[in-house]
Image (tube, rainbow, N blue to C red):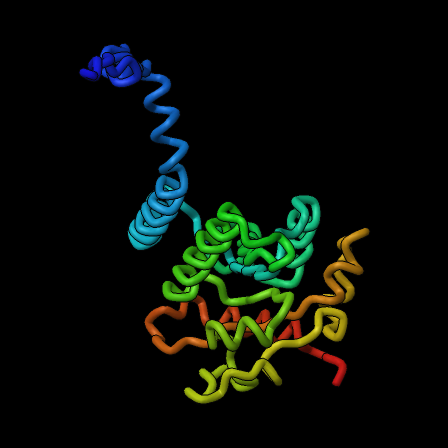
Length: 234
């Protein structure tokens, strides 16, 4: 018996179907969905490069008298950060001669593991780490407020020895290089209200300079450091 050739309906339907046509908005949304984090990383890199050029040229910017960096699991609350800047300014001097003492507080939240291993957390941590490395490389922040000085020193080896010099190349310990906030009378006396308990468990350290040309207002920063550690509890 001869077999009757039956039409391949499924294939015909597939070949004859109308192609899906996306609007410009839909194409843009799809592209952003798959590439958003590349844009974030690219933006961070551009911001770093732009900031370096901006700082080198000093365009339209009055440099703060002191720069502190906070490195921890999460950002300090905005109100806490504002109180800190105001109170820390009372310990310093007008370095740039603009008639006021200004403290800049930069926050580098290197997110804790309890946030999970999701992509968003990893990218946020990466972006924060990149900006911190740029800060350290350019010699921007002189003072570091730290949640975990041991991990910070192990990763970046940035904290200075007690005499202000860089640690030995094999020394990655934080011992003697960072002090508990509550052990520093000058810091413990700051009026930061409800955030006192939060700050009391953090540490303060100063950076070292492997390249002396990166040191900005070193003498004035060292003077503030001496005020901070004056009368420290041993």
